[in-house]
Image (spheres, rainbow, N blue to C red):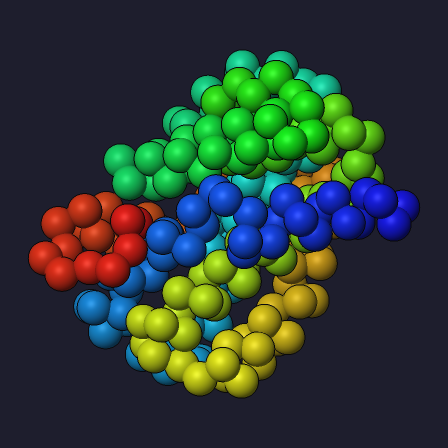
Length: 210
């Protein structure tokens, strides 16, 4: 188990070269529009992404890939669920970088796939535990959004850690539910985050790619 946890800690670290730091998942637009402007609103926004948006869907897709479901079909689903052109580029670019890096360093097929599918395929090939993989991947998703909020709102580092601490029970619950779901359970209703992701494509001044 220690080796598995070390592998997951490496793969899901902010330092793993998938370029996660470059993406805000529409949060930059939300800050620019005034929808997010303090710790409370940032936490609410991120929680919505986790429970009702891409966080939940990605967790379900990762679990499905770890069960050995058709990776080609799952990849197509992941791409179809991207609500904007930028979101599509985000998941494909990160997934491609992840697959290439894991393939080169750990061994694997290196096939470019949407990020949650690429993670699930690689984790299954390494025999990593599903519950921990899905939970840590969702925690990494939350941490990346908190990191973006720290820079954009801006928030202090301690405020960012307070958000993460408050979100841990939600991350744990959504991850657990995702491992029990199938692809028929995919979907979401985080419309504000989807609209923000679309509007970000025309934001005049921006730091992030999404």
